[in-house]
Length: 43
Image (cartoon, rainbow, N blue to C red; front, side, top):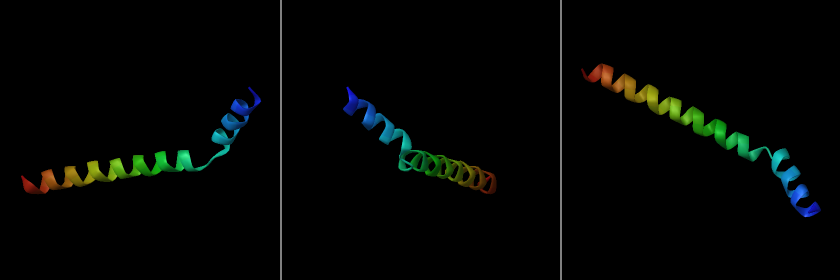
């Protein structure tokens, strides 16, 4: 049981997970902005 708690604590301390989520959100916003700009200019 203590190994599970130790792994959970390490996972919560790890900065790579939130950083990956932040990059994914930024990328999705950039894609939406590009699609909006292309559809606006294409019309």
